[in-house]
Length: 250
Image 1 (tube, rainbow, N blue to C red):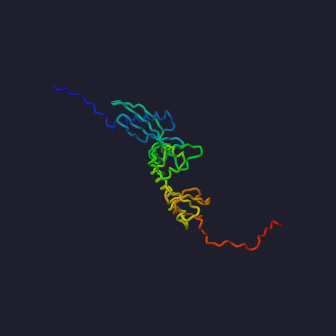
Image 2: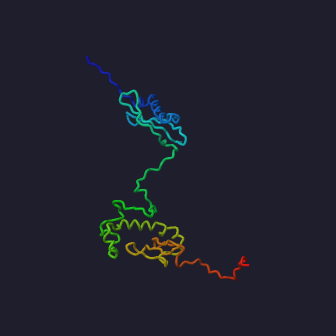
Image 3: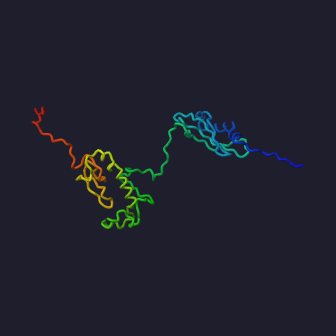
């Protein structure tokens, strides 16, 4: 006669001790150990795996609108009770809680204009704007004319670095499509204050020498502004009529 063996069926997730009233009660008690009066209604449970789950309770804390308590509970296979793994106060997944911005690595936080006097900002390893091979220098045509310090330096401006810079200048505040250029009657290339840069930048860029305009900035040859050396308002100079009268002089 064949012997029979009673087989225990594993509990389905919906009937797991992780969902039980005992689990909810134990999780609530753990949250109340942190702040008894700040634990509100049970608002859900999320299964992590077959042995652990997260019970959620509304937070009743002044100033914490949109936050909730999350209690991680765990149970060994076949257990009838749960143990508490962790208690945390966190923003609701879709609530109105104020959240800190996403963490950004320091190397990605820097922006143009962040460098201040005394700051040290060495290039990142592998910076594609630089090359250690003089043969790949974007300024190779003029490197021989530079000082001895040039011969002793480690890095040279790469072609990618020069291309990136000219693209930035072309689309920037002093480029050909800027608001200044669109409203200017004349272009920089015909202005006495425009100093062409020449190679290796090319013939399309120069430096502005007008203290009332883009003084000291690289500008595109087809950019422009209202301070052009050949500009005119179209108005005749006013003529002086009579002598000014100062009534406080008497």
